[in-house]
Length: 268
Image (cartoon, rainbow, N blue to C red; front, side, top):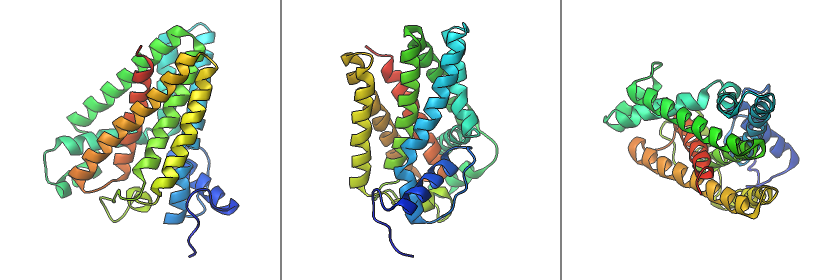
């Protein structure tokens, strides 16, 4: 099979990438036409677009509840619940499994077996509860400032979280297993391509913030940086602990990035 150019590629490659991103990162009806590393590379470069879609849907529902008089707390709960619905809880499940694996204090091979088990251990439960509480608390704060701040924060966090997956797929990040999603996407994205996508996202995030105020433009960029930084720390820990990435690690990275972005937006 021919190698597609890294980065944008031709039109069929871009469409394969979009289908791969939406087919693996959302429950939206999308037929994945190719399951190979070329499609995976394009898909992970398109991951922020899947995040943008999830963020817009979450923001729309949360804002609708707020404007209908539900109050900021219920709007925050609806907003935090929507991504779980649109991913069938896949990322939260990955967060729980990764927390169980990291907390097991077992060798890498045994920890990976713990992560593959269908049940959720105490570390997983604690991680999911704390992450959801943090997200709801941050969204409540943002919605208290107004629907625009809540909606903008939701979209930013969801997009930055999927951008973290782009970085988790970059060259130099190995898979922990020879099969699964981690194996197909690991080390597919060139560092230069990930950097270009990140730069474009930061410009757009700053521009969106300017619609509210210059301060919000700066805060958006800082929140995106916090999301990517927190995700990078977790990714580094998982690679050292498990020997690479898995689909569960991707879920944990996504939830960590989203939570860090929302928390950063509440500061200042």
